[in-house]
Amino acid sequence: MVKQVYRITYPNGKIYVGLDLTGTTLYLGSPRKALLSADLGLDGSTDFTITLRKEILWQSDTATDAEARRVEVECIVREQANDPRIGYNLWPRRKDA
Image (cartoon, rainbow, N blue to C red; front, top):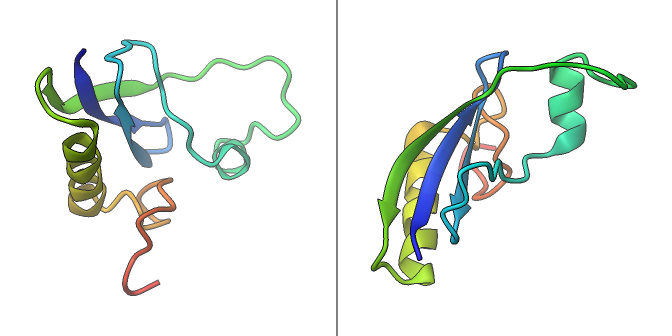
């Protein structure tokens, strides 16, 4: 089964880096929904359209789950997706936070 680390870019330019252990094309992860809704002005919206970009940063069909999780953390740190000015990842915690 293909394992992927991906980056989602939202219309406001912020990113979310996630891990998919099944290689599902339409899987978009689980960023903090309340913060995302507030940032995009979707609070209370019942009908909206947004454009997302999903990029595969890394993939493997031979890596273990543990290896894939290690790469995910490396990508989160490299992309600074755990900096609230840049992204929606809450983990791993930034050392300067």
